[in-house]
Image (cartoon, rainbow over all chains, first blue to last red; front, side, top):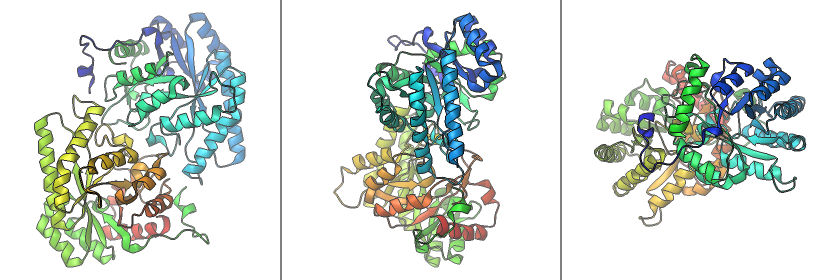
Amino acid sequence: MRAGAREGSAAGAPASPDLSRLGLNQATTRHWSVAEAVAGCARADIRWIGLWRDKVAAQGVSASARALRETGVRCSSLCRGGMFTASSAAERAARIDDNRRAIDECAELGSDTLVLVCGGIPQGGDLAGARAMVWDGIAAIAPYARERGVRLGIEPLHPMFCADRSVVTTLGQALSAAERLNRPFPAGEPAVGVIVDAYHVWWDPAVEADIARAGRSIVGFHVSDWITPLPAVLEGRGMMGDGWISLRALRQAVDRAGYDGPIECEIFNRDLWSEPGDAVLGLMKARYLATV
Amino acid sequence: MRAGAREGSAAGAPASPDLSRLGLNQATTRHWSVAEAVAGCARADIRWIGLWRDKVAAQGVSASARALRETGVRCSSLCRGGMFTASSAAERAARIDDNRRAIDECAELGSDTLVLVCGGIPQGGDLAGARAMVWDGIAAIAPYARERGVRLGIEPLHPMFCADRSVVTTLGQALSAAERLNRPFPAGEPAVGVIVDAYHVWWDPAVEADIARAGRSIVGFHVSDWITPLPAVLEGRGMMGDGWISLRALRQAVDRAGYDGPIECEIFNRDLWSEPGDAVLGLMKARYLATV
């Protein structure tokens, strides 16, 4: 259903979530540095931000952490760890080392969640082998993350990214993996959880059942929309309400599962990137209230 | 794994399927009419062809059936019925009528299988509602199809087509629907089955289990490949061996499930469409033997 139809606030319509849960994922305002994005969130009274490692590296980890402290904006997650698949054992080991650095960055930024985009099929490999590399990679970093108070969030990506970005393609698959990977640890707060990104999972006939099954393993919830015709595979996401995803139904399912954390708005879209950041944040807040 | 690595015929490597099962889906040689495509198959000793309704309409149904009879090439399936989702009841009824015509065309062409591409989300609708329209539509045409000896093949499409082409996105979902829809009929040959198209289902962690579960409900198997970067959402499929799908493993799973029917090569690709049809068929045969 397109936005016009969905934004009407019929009597008895379910309430929007509290604005205090809204977060800006930095990919939505790609042309802003960390300092600019954090300042933008503070101006717009947005309490959470999901940061990207390349932007954090450009700003400096300490300077990024300082910007957060000075404004009171909190880092909801760091994007991204993962990319465990590679043709050689040496390269896979290097990826694991890089994930350990990402965990350290998370801790320094005060974020409790590292988002994992797990990697596609390496040259010469196949799908089953790539999936095994992913599980091995997560198992290798989970104890390190747990010691530092950082949760790993496996983010299943849309199946159109299976070959080149993530062989983890469904929430059910991510959840089963998380359950296996948590077994070595004492019960309680899981070391490995899942990220529910509406854009990646909305099409899945099992998504509501898998969200319910996930329960407290959900460590992040991302929103955007699926617009048609798809402008581009990588940079074609839409603003909430401009597309076809029943975001409110998904958000309510995530709430029912027990997730009460930040809701990050993550939109890769060239048109949006050409808009002034403050205007993007204003639109994002309005659409969050109307459609999430 | 890319073709170079996979085409090697290691000792003990599993055998390719018999050439007598290879079929040309007409979408692969889009610039050929039905008569041209049937003649091309006859020249190349390809025994099966999957026809498209727009091409059959342009040729005439009777003329198409005659071309098949005269060459001995057999119609493995007709593409496509479905598209059950629409905003109004009148439009949905019109779609059902059109599906009945497609069933009649199947019977006249001597094909026992109508491929169903079920439809996306209609304007003003939502995903759950669209799925209900699909099941209602198939239920409405199933008795008519069964009386005419035509099986309905629900084809789950890749989730990237969920909004605009098919709200049926996984083999497991299609199979559960087929099981429900077959309940009114006596046991035996199912009225409603599923089409396994490698391009649409290869990414699914459950695909091999669902193929095994499908068993004799599989009424078609389509092959092509997923190439990266994806050239286009609609017309970006690759020739078998040029991409990332483990086609042989999927074909063996389909064989183990008991499917021994035609294997259609269906490739939507602009580059391929600019090649002479006979060359495309030659390449298709070679790649079928090497990779399927």
